[in-house]
Length: 544
Ligand code: SPV
Ligand code: MG
Image (cartoon, rainbow, N blue to C red; front, side, top):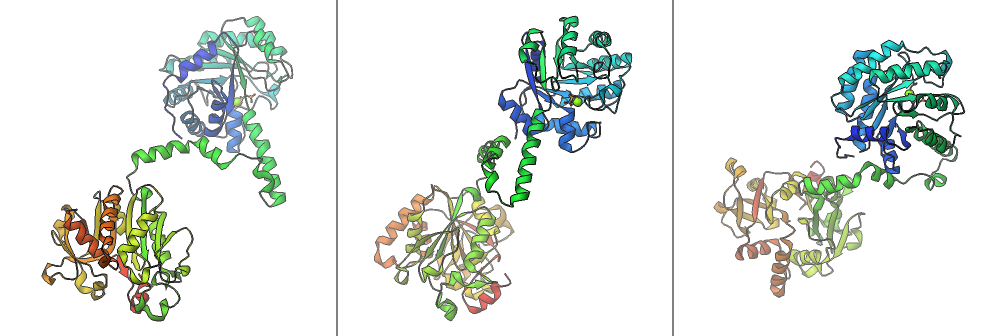
């Protein structure tokens, strides 16, 4: 999920901190929870040390390294536009570590950091707080000063967290420290308390007045009406760990139910849908971007497989099924063809059935039937297919149901920008069976090293070409671009008006196109395909 980074996260936070009314920020502990907090309408995020360590599965005792925290913050920051206040514990070391931290936070557009006056490695304030030692006040002031000196963004904020109450000291010590930290440059004071009532923080605020903004974390004194904080002029309330705790409760319940019931029925309606997860991840944005940036290849392409004829030459193998359903290594030939198209992202595959059409029934393919297969030819089938296509015009590859191929073939066809493209095998002399396709090709140039950089076109295709003019054999692959489909259909309609063309094959189409001055681009290859014409081929195909 990418979100445009706004350069002013720090100024947004500073405004929030200095706002004349009570403001709220909410805990998050990873990119997803940060996004959820933002969507709920919060103006800022508390990157809680407790929650981040917990979601890593470690203790809130600086067990996760500061760079691990930083990496996590980067996801949070990238996922959101609102400012993040990092719970920076004790600053992960002395003044020097604090300076490096500030610079790294600024690089990640983190708006502010809060550091607490305890010792590294710290312990969470709610674990034996009274037994915890406070930091030396002067040393802590130096850390604040160093942090302020290190920031390059004037709006970056450092909040000093006073732990005097947590560690068993009184109001006087809390005030003394708050004042020193304020003098050292802190932009705000977080006064923390572990009492179930707000007495300590309210007493502090009364004495402190408005020397600088006061931030509180009412985790323990949660029952206090929020208006009390408002009336006392508190600046910012942090809901410090509630996203984490809510998710833990939900995960525990779900895990228990799954473990006990061994099915999904009773939880499916209780949990969020997968599509909601996709939405939070910004999946739609990527789909849009793919349209803009990905090359137009398979995704918007479709295939037509001409497979209406029996394939008499295979004898009893095709007694009860057409050639396209003959087994090659345990699965029908058509299945190999569909897999090859699928593997390059072509899902929309339309098969023209005819002979024993009931036997052509693989899932996930579309079918159209040429019931007149016995006395019609390829062009007739092709027209049926083009008429049956339901989707909007896409680049379309037309191939045969009895030809196995390497995905390189259709890939190269789609990459060629031309409206009409065919593949020609220049190694035709070695392969006598190729005449079956009736497709010897004469082209504008033979296959050679030069052919790589030249656009070669078809000049004629058929069986009546003098051997010295033959440059190869047409392999049965024909790509038509989306805009090429309409003229193709027109030509087919014209040709098929003439009853003499009822049984015509693809060669007649190409000849007619050339006559009408359409150019047909030729891509050369040597091999990478195999048509099944005989029992020998079936055997060979097993090792293709
Ligand atoms: C945190 O959220 O990690 C805090 C607040 O520091 S508290 O857990 O109350 O110490
Ligand atoms: Mg913390």
